[in-house]
Length: 180
Image 1 (cartoon, rainbow, N blue to C red):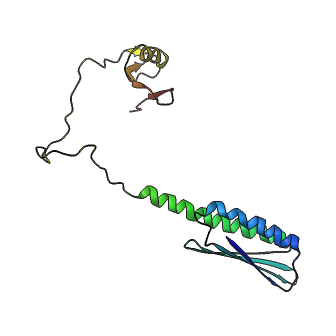
Image 2: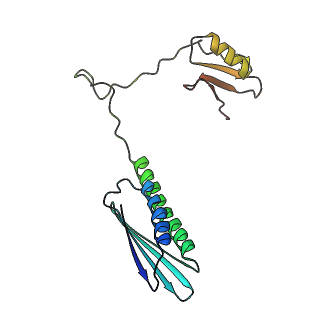
Image 3: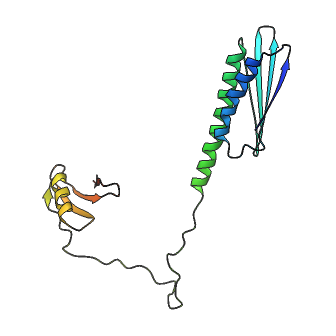
């Protein structure tokens, strides 16, 4: 990443240059590729106004941020805040765009020639296996630990509804309570 400075109507101190450089190097965490990124920092003093304008180019971006206050350091900070807000917004849009893409569902196995498009998975009913008994969720957990099943269907005496307790991958238990 390359940081360039332009100054108008004043001679900057080394401390000011170093301060600005350190501040704007923080934007690298919001960029994927910083090799071709260039940040142009324009600082200007006009009577009582101290103006900072930043132009970030590269990595298919062109962002600008400008701020003016009575103090050059606070102008730098506020300009950085604006630039970071723009970069965060771009990153969030990129994430949303990736999430919104439809993923093609691939079959788990290659279909054989015998299989036709009319073949659909069947629903096989298991009778008598899940007869909900009136118990509390705590008792359902105890029964679940005693059994080899991954879940238990039960009639919750606390709310009067049929619930499901299941073993979670993290070692805890999940409770499904359909509020119909």
